[in-house]
Length: 154
Image (tube, rainbow, N blue to C red; front, side):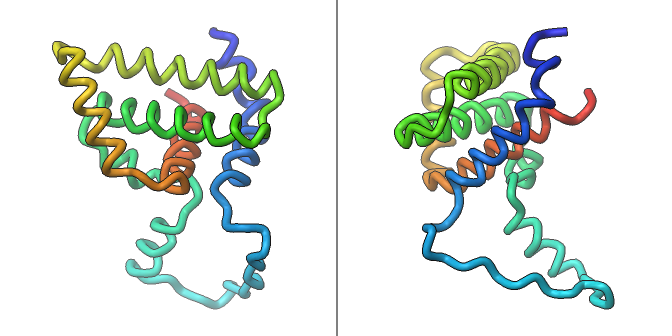
């Protein structure tokens, strides 16, 4: 078992909190009051809306056609988020190491799933995926989804 696999469960709450902080609205925004949902029934449209607003964009990952596409999305999202957090000085040395381990994991998955793609094709794929997901908040949500996938049993 790798060091990441052993220590990831302890690090996930910290990483998730950092991801949430990086992707949240400005501090001046106020949180909505919680509504009682004891008697409310949700239809398919409500569930789709909730999925779109979900923290941790699993839809983007499950919509990715192949393991290569999922690894590419995670690689881009984690790189972007790490850069944002480092620019803000929001990562301790231990958190930087944890993000580095997760980023390397997804880079290995990307390499393993690339098949016979050339470096040029991979570069073009990355550029297209970055253009399709330009918003830092979207990338942060995807990164959370990637971290959640790591928690799930294989």
